[in-house]
Image (cartoon, rainbow, N blue to C red; front, side):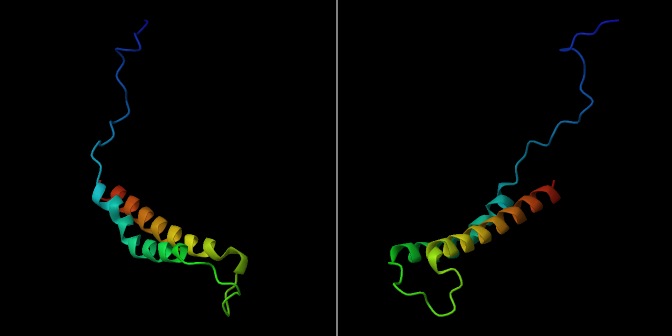
Length: 86
């Protein structure tokens, strides 16, 4: 017996198509860190490394990584909340 692929029913349950955008927007809590990031880029890099600054040649990278880490953490938390509330 042959069956047409188009008429065969799928055994996979359809995904819920609603998106809980509020939980993903949790990443907006990183906006205060973004403000600090922009203030760092608006000013010139110091000529000498500040005392105790561990990665001196990468002055701007350190500020960028703190923002990315914070925003990424909130984003992953929002995705987790999105999955748990489905």
